[in-house]
Length: 151
Ligand code: HEC
Image (cartoon, rainbow, N blue to C red; front, side):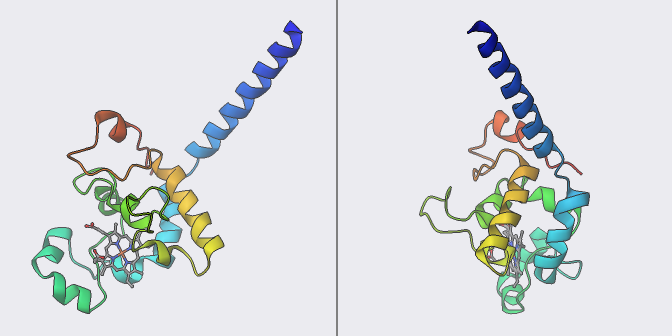
């Protein structure tokens, strides 16, 4: 009986370690950049303004269907960690974590069908780690520490 318990514990630990390793392996350079380039760059590429610039002339950029620049690693992580904490999560969430149960308005761009959107959302979630929709003022130290966003 005791032996069985030990075996179960060993197997579970191996499985847990495997799943952690798999989660760690999602990186910007091997997974996220590809998705971003094919799904988001058209509106968030190098021809789009920095966040502050966008804010100054919001309506003009929106009318052109242009967002703010996010097409490099340092640009993108500003919308995850700081200063625009949780923005990527609020916009990409499929509705499971939003207050009103509706998907964020960038979720639709994650794929051309629900399967692709869910698969890409899953990669973003694994890459980020702590999928919190909180803004900077509500985020705790642990919320930020739980974000991995490996390059
Ligand atoms: C068709 C154009 C278009 C596409 C494609 C697009 N976006 Fe956007 N995005 C915008 C525009 C315009 C805004 C600004 C208006 C708004 O806030 O909704 C925006 C806003 C955002 C914001 C909010 C930033 C902030 O300051 O709060 C995030 C995050 C975001 N987009 C992420 C993405 C991601 C990730 C993708 C790819 C999966 C993507 N977007 C695809 C046009 C687009």
